[in-house]
Every structure is written in C-alpha cells, then in structure tokens.
Length: 55
Image (cartoon, rainbow, N blue to C red; front, side, top):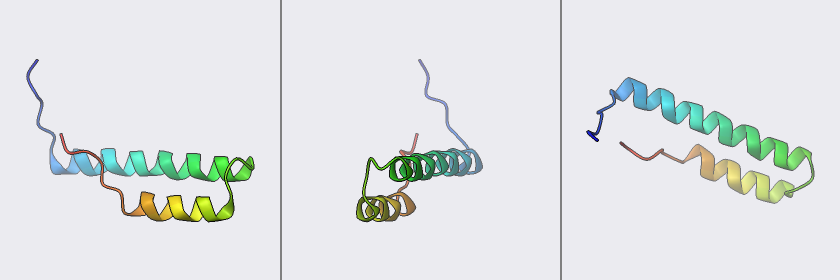
C-alpha cells in the first residue's frame, strides 16, 4: 500500500481535530469525577504542547 502525503494544511486540520477531542475527553473525565483538577491541568498542558504523528 502506497503512503499518501498529506498537505501541511490537511495535517494542521487533523492535529487540531485531535487536540479538540483530547480536550473534550479531558474535560468529561474531570466533570465525571474520574480525574482530579490537578490531573486535568497536567493533561491540558500536555495536550496544548502535543503534536500529532507526522505521516
């Protein structure tokens, strides 16, 4: 199977979508009481600095 190259714009959109989902799940876990505020904040910092895997 041949690897498809993605444009930088498509890659940015994919990374943004991934970050939005990670932020959403982080918030839901906190709201449901499954993680503490400290854990939520630590994860938010990791998410904000995260860059998706380049393809």
